[in-house]
Image 1 (tube, each protein chain N blue to C red):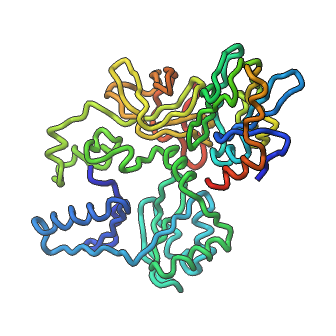
Image 2 (image 1 turned 180 degrees about the vertical axis):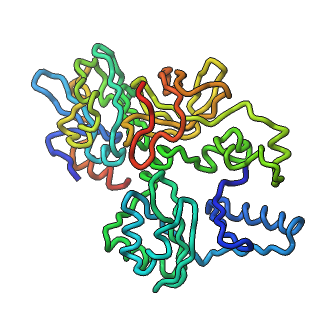
Image 3 (image 1 turned 180 degrees about the horizontal axis):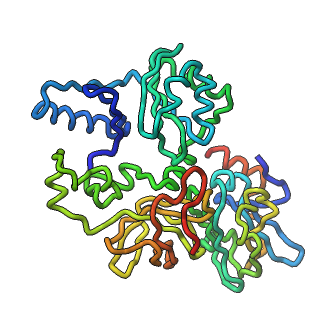
Length: 127
Length: 273
């Protein structure tokens, strides 16, 4: 199972990467894309939208099921990955490269409260 | 509707019926009740000792003949929906040119204790296992109903795309004919393809048409068409080519009404918009 050590994670299978400019980049994990199966549709939030931590702000849909994506941190959406929205299968092929959206967190220090790779691995061990 | 099933003619006095496993007890009870009141000379024998393996696809029949030596001569001329019993090294095989996929192929029934051996013999000539996800997209692309999902005891065959199985025009009487004649349907089961982007058509989504609302009974993303498709129970009068709106999550998405099936033998049959 692919769980890069340099990322942070949520129990709802989002990965989070801190960027130099203070924003974070968010996608879904290898575990999530495997469980969902082939993705056929992605709905991304509007740039500029303000989200609360754990607020549903995107949707991924596979042949099997639709799944909400939750904002890992409170903040403002600063970017969305339009090419991936046009080609959702990229998320299956490259879950850590095919990011979904970026946000500027209200509280950057809150990133430290997210799961690290080991804690995420333990959390999916129970699934 | 109690179930939808296949009856194979083997002799004037011998038929084999293949029913849905989930409704088998109900079907057997119903048929036994009919036999007791209408056909005391007939007997019904559930064959719980048999297993069935479906082999489907353009090469399916050739693979079956390669794996199951000695079956080709007897089954080469079998037409679709026809079956034959053939002796083999695994005992008697029941080979039917039917399937739940819209592809050519055979369904092979064998005594249960030999099923694993038969499976391995087929695998050895390159037949690949397929799971329920593949089965569901195939059957939906082929416009084939799933009992319990597209119909149940609350709907009639006339509102389920199955009028062709209950021939009201024939002078022959059959159980249920009078009820069907007395209750013409105001609904139909028909196909939809999703035109707008916005998700996947799924069971229970509401469909808005110019003649009133309907509901999707089965939906999926079709690998063959590369778009979402669905079976929907809509008011009669809504015709192929018309546009309707489907409530997906919180938005209305445009979908086009199409005749079934969506695909056969791996090729899309849906005319371009």
